[in-house]
Image (cartoon, rainbow, N blue to C red):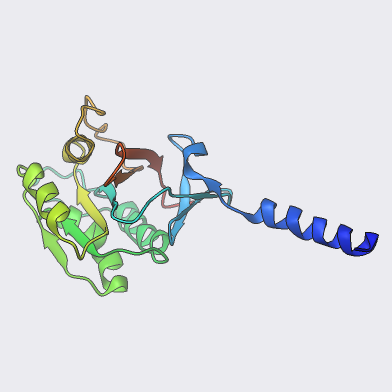
Length: 204
């Protein structure tokens, strides 16, 4: 092999390594992300991380509803910022597989996910926030759903994560003013379940 061809192969190999996504175990909890595309997380700076998932595993995307109106009513709507976050969520997840979308039957949760549901052509499936174990059982037994997104509330989202993980990973709910959290959980068939505690914002 000539020296010039060897150098060419070396440059191609280096470029390939530079462009390859990192394993998701290297992503830091609290990292702000901008996109999830076919099993790859992209952070706000464009760096990519592979989601470590095997055949037979289920992936859950758990989010709290977007910013709600603070007017004291039983079923508040989203604010303008909340609607912007809902639209950002739809764009953020447009390139990844979603088999099922679950939401509580409140205006704030439904409006958080309706744009993404429309893009994916999926119905929003209702669940009761008081029946998280039943929700997990339903999804676990559904062989047609390998990737689901569940929209909940500041107390139910971390509580559902605990149910999926089978342990008390979260001891408190999210702060009432905190809407940035997105939890990515891998319900593994063979190994210990995994959670990635990430964040997203409507403005990047």
